[in-house]
Length: 116
Image (cartoon, rainbow, N blue to C red; front, top):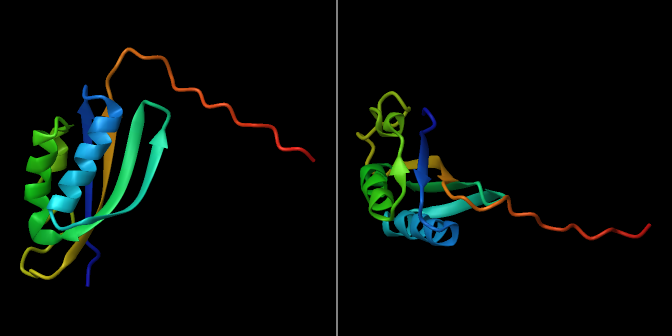
């Protein structure tokens, strides 16, 4: 069986905490769950998730409603991305990369020195 992958990329002017919450809620509302996430300062976030394959279009609509504009190539044909809608119980693994548009400086986090 071919592995199902969905790669979404979007941008937003929504405050980053609200945008990540909106993405999380969109994934949950689509019957999915978050596998992992990575934050890159206050510039970008990547969220890896899984959800039923038939919910991917609903997820895209929920993300747009949450203020996350998806790039045009993210809404390409699902057959090109390795998904098969003929299997209703199939899960899709995906990633969502959100770039935050703002005028704030980079978020700097001090890392404490480790003795030894």
